[in-house]
Length: 354
Image (cartoon, rainbow, N blue to C red):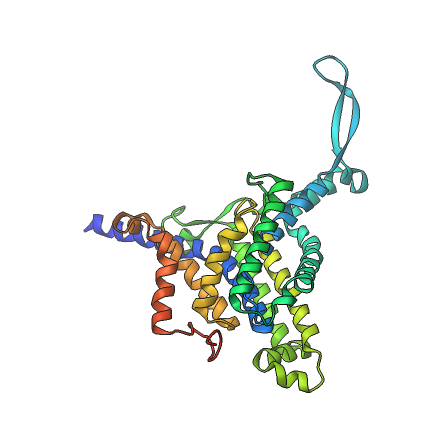
């Protein structure tokens, strides 16, 4: 009896932990899928380069961190090298501007501060991508859109690989978030049985804020209301004399910024590498289809749902009986949902049915 209770308790610990693990991965899926849905809902474009925007965002954090640690050589007369010469020390320029204490604090908080750098960069990248390439494929078949944007994603991936190398680049979170929170003690389990890194909690909260901000922008601003009206009936909005194309271009930039911000804050969780965008893209596109093409709430709901299911399927207790389930669970769920609800969980009639 005691052994059975212990096993059940251990399994419950593992389930709770995997649900928590699914929240940060689900947050990334939801943010990327939200951007994909914004682009499809406004422009009618299936953008397979959206994962590359997530990757570029992560490398914005890397770039900003390198800018902050850019240094110059200073000769320290009080110390010598192994030859007895005055020691040459690399000192970050930021020390000269703010002092060592403040400079160290800024470098430590490089990832959150890189948001200020990433937003304008991603808005520009999104605008350039839409105006330079994607606008020429608005009325083309979805197969053409997928082919061109997938090719663009490969090009961006190889550019990042050329400049930053093929190896992952560790990008640490601020030291204050280096530890873990003991959820086990909070929920009544044994201490240290369910511990969860603070930064993953930060990422989940950040994702919730971004998702809430996007929905509030679309729901409560005049600009957002026009965009939602254009998503529902583009021709009618155009007949009212509103330049809906300009607003949709801005929305593409906003969608790019959302993906970039998702990548920035995910950098301490998964060290940035050149193929991370492609890794997330396929699963995020499945999330969009499961949630319902064109449905923003559906994209968010499916992102968290599939993220949690994928984590639960990764449990040792599950893999013992169903090896490899964690690799296919998202696709199995997608097949089941699309067989029973062809438009996805919250998809609307007519989308992708022509």
